[in-house]
Length: 179
Image 1 (tube, one colour):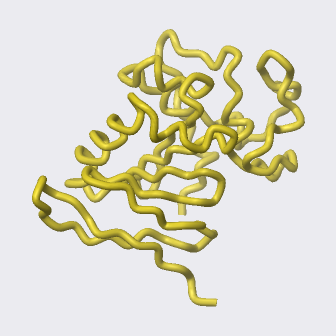
Image 2 (image 1 turned 90 degrees about the vertical axis):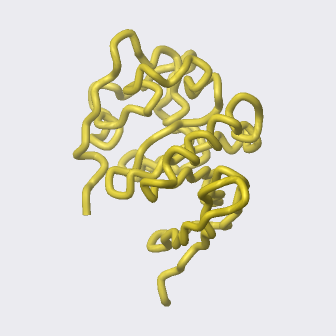
């Protein structure tokens, strides 16, 4: 299995984190004892990392899709959208990690419509758009949103593509690891 910390993406020209630190809230970083959904204790008031020079490799290697993909519009900057976009390096699923303090941000315009368009474009490739609010996951499909509930380590998405009245869609469910 690939370790996401070993995949380093470069920022797109003209993109910089600036005062945005939302990734420091929505992701767990065990190396600095930072739980998902709460601000990392190293985030400085006004933005930036208090241990930037000595930050963990996981943090050093991460850049959100807004940072790396110049085609993603300014409305998707995480501190504006309240969401951090990333691609799973193995499945190529689009992961949308939502600020739990703004849990409904992904349902607002223009974000929800764009997530649906990305879902429609990704479905023929068997790639999915997953919205996460802490551990609760919803799959965005071209024609509907499917809440899957809490996704634990080892859980996986099971999907069966089919033609619906409006075109290609899928039936999706969570498959849990046997205990």
